[in-house]
Amino acid sequence: MTKRVAILISGGGSNMEALVRSMQGDHPARAVLVFSNVEDAGGLAKAQGLGVPTAALDHRTFGADRAAFDRAVNDILEDAAPDIVCLAGYMRILTPAFVEHWAGRMINIHPSLLPKYKGLHTHQRALDAGDTEHGCSVHEVTADLDGGPLLGQAHISIEPGDTAETLAARLLPFEHELFVKVLRRYAKGEKAFVTLG
Image 1: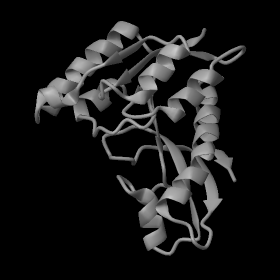
Image 2: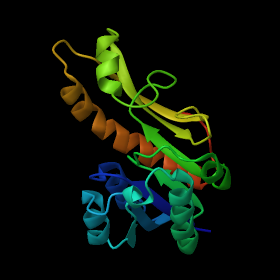
Image 3: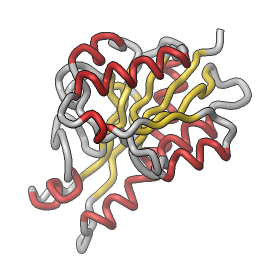
């Protein structure tokens, strides 16, 4: 049975686009919704161009009431009835109730080799620490920020002269490849760890 996938974004949606393009042929899943908390996020137009229904809701209209916003997002997701929720550059910290509702059905891509560098500014933090290696991780989402069970990682070398921008640009294709591979397995109920690089 084909799994239904909702993808949450906040920006340009390059990881979302990679996921949607991969969900063809014998892939065990199909995208049924792309949602953004930013009404003019570039990824929404990309999703529409790929024939995927979209929805948007500006979190700023909810002020500091994260719980109310997440309830509204949950209502939108429930209408799409996804089996899996993918966070693909979704820049919101989720409330415990939202995470609990989707527990075991929600995965996230994060641009660091977790458990290193949870949160933001991961590329600069890796450079500041003098690391020789960087990468990205896909993990199940739990109430622990960027701390759920790991499903896969991709590794790249940090080169002399790298900046946060060059590192981010070199890592992005690996993010796409890793997320695509993990989702294909996850949609089949497989959680074996995926390693790239």
